[in-house]
Image (spheres, rainbow, N blue to C red):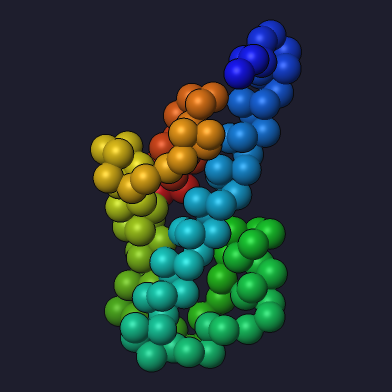
Length: 113
Ligand SMILES: [Zn+2]
């Protein structure tokens, strides 16, 4: 297979990183949502949260305060660190086609943590 070179390779690398960052950011927000559900805050499932989790890296959990709020807030970075560790150690399988430009997935996961 012909490998991209020069500016094309750079543009592809950046595009791949942006895509990876977007996907791991959604995973980060999913960890917040999962923590909210574990703690019984099912009101987290709103159309607004779906849009904000995919577009603006944010979810709002109505009624979450005190230690529930703290757990939900920290679940995001804890999940991102777990995901980054799994990706960095090769524990979590990522297809070769997704990693051939470098370490975008690992870098993106660490950045969201
Ligand atoms: Zn977060």
